[in-house]
Image (cartoon, rainbow, N blue to C red):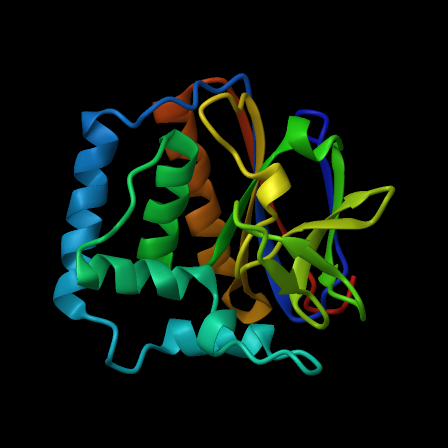
Length: 224
């Protein structure tokens, strides 16, 4: 366990980067982080999102499990960020959300960020969703069906709180967040790139949000 948080992986073919932060200041982002975001947005907007993208295809293939199809509204969150950059509507929220969006935009890996105090847990498992599982993902009460979708669940209740598509509304971070867990999802075959992106996310959170930060990566290549 790092910073008293444990994450298990039960999803063959998946690599997960884990970042844990304790005692962060999740205020509005400062000029240095905002400038880095602006540069990444400009680069993404210039390249567009219509050309074939091997990373996008690999992430979608990772999410093709059982009946789940990563298309339409079920696309990974990283694809929405690319579209937001192209359309000039990229969000600026707070340090944790902005670092999440910056790293996801640059790496093309989807990322979840969970408020640990709201989750009420320090142990999690990354697995695929089961029949009948769902959660509310926005303030208006819309639900995301989770069957066969890669997700993170709190233990010991085994209650889903995040996915590479949309996170649970009940455990999202805000300006009051002081302890958080970030999960970066990628194919096991791209584990090295997942590790690079995870380290970058940890460094940016420490630089701009402060507090204690730990990071590591898990691989489910063999189903462990």
